[in-house]
Image 1: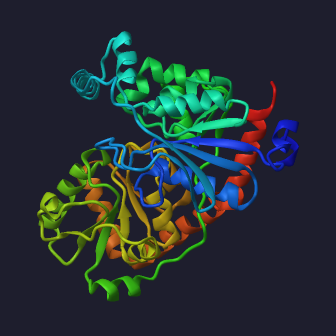
Image 2 (image 1 turned 120 degrees about the vertical axis):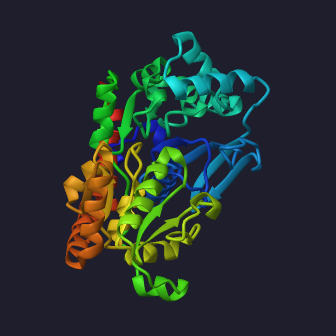
Image 3 (image 1 turned 60 degrees about the vertical axis):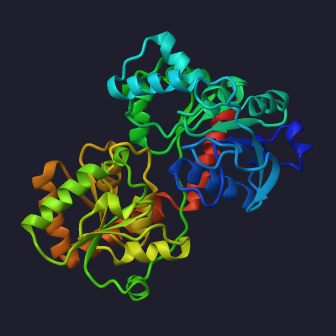
Length: 407
């Protein structure tokens, strides 16, 4: 990476200066975009490959958008973090909610309303001012994910230095004119996997200098016996990991699993690891266990017959990689291009469409230990081959060469 450094960068200790702009940041947050940003920033700093400053807000909860954290500078795992308050004075919550509801329900807003919708997102003028004032300090600024005000407005402060890291999904916001303008006006775009880049192409977006990098993972293993002894839980189970919310496909998953148990009575359970209120899954065979500490999470995956990832809106899916590291196979919907791509590339699981195929797939994996082991090991080999940190950092280095080249 030294070949990429200019004389200006040499005055900062010979390191490339990068900014990562994300709406919230911390090591206790649950969210793929936040996790991607934090892990890559920490790896770049730990390996001395770049000096990274995270520019984020004082917000901890994206549901309330309250400024709960103190503004100013701090450090987390060696990474410099600058927090700025979100300004609420200029928002019109009633109009914002009206536009959001119409966008989600019909996907149709007039172009002027689309830009109005962006205007009513949560913004941090102080963060934008910092980007403007420090445009000669940061060689590149990365904006993750695409659908927040910090990306829409922040990336337009210095478009020639902006790299969009969109975590793009096939959802109404991806079709908006402001989204297309943002992704085409920046210096480059970082995609998490090939299907995400293909989605941008299907949407008619022609981003400059696209590059697929992906997330990085350390070689770790889980211990199934340790989980079962700790939880005193000895029934066979399939696992859902993540936020229990309708956008993640959990409504269909719950319906399918309950119907499966009607047709296949027995001890098989669906364990839910993440934020799930027991009252929302009121069924004796659906077992919420809440968030698990990072050191224990892979034990849960290792004990599962399979991970079920029902979401159709993924740009990478960290939980697939975690399950495979633990040696568990996965079950994903055929029509999620991202997760089905990973399954096809890895041979680490099975896909389904509609209930009958779901039942067939679940029958196969719950009843065939040899198939589970074979698929789980294939998935593990895939993660260690394609998404080990050495490979991911090399892809990121090549992407930087592309984005920093003058042409």
